[in-house]
Length: 86
Image 1 (cartoon, rainbow, N blue to C red):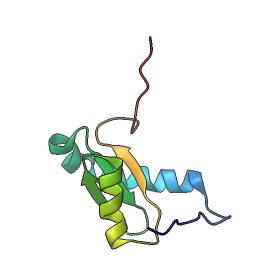
Image 2 (cartoon, rainbow, N blue to C red):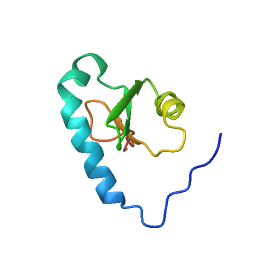
Image 3 (cartoon, rainbow, N blue to C red):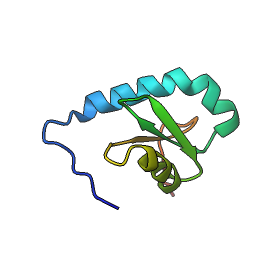
């Protein structure tokens, strides 16, 4: 699989903001049946791809958009992964 490099003028903050706006539009539909799963968001189209893991969601998204970047989110949570404390 080809590695896609981020352009120098890529705006991370704008990308995150757009992805979160797309997530909010889909939230009511996504959360009841998919809580805990991963969603890959393609920002330019607004398409979302749902799977059990980041890899699976990314592979689904990459099949349709082989050259694009994706934003990943765990449905119903603030972060994709957590860190357990002592």
